[in-house]
Length: 107
Length: 183
Image (cartoon, rainbow over all chains, first blue to last red; front, side):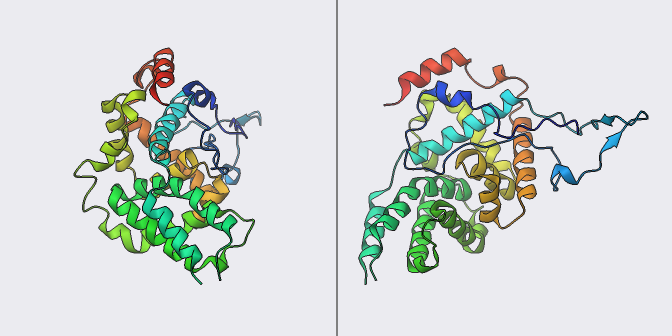
């Protein structure tokens, strides 16, 4: 297959540069894992038949849309997290804390 | 039966992310807070069905998503932050990227089909694995990957991002802005 798959997701070097990430340590599950996947497919890429040329060598099929560059993906991810983190950084509203405490103390 | 304080703390520590997810679904901060509250009521009254040691965020996100799908979604298009409260809440943002750029991004995100948007948020912002996101959305991992990819392609399209330079200030500028921006 001519696909380049990055197991660990795309470059998240920008997180460090922003200098503001990673302070939500309580969010242990939090990580970023937007990995490159083949566009326009509802099936895992492994289900696709491999195309070979007349010499029997694998051929990467032309893509309907150019794969997004890693940097563009990184920018989208950055914007997305920035928007999301603005809310995350607001913490837990007092009425929610009160609600959870009250419910968890009930018999 | 009183709730184990450790479980209670796990619930509370998930709330900020749960709110962010709810806002991305509802597009309206008041409705999002109602949704979070209802999710917590439901979760805590069914806490016996949570297996200690398993993924609390994934469990709560699943409940929230199901609630949204069943009850909130039909009301979703009534108001898309008509009074601008959501944008107003995000006070820190202009320090990092321009207000216009942020609004463009939010508008583009709102144009995505909801299944693509939620997949993108779960994986790209909430930080769930594709497997957890598939569990939360009740679909196959391949479907989540496809939705995330379509969402990103569509976003890039809507924002007409052809190069990094089209996406706001250059890196050094952004680093300076970010460094001086918060806390």
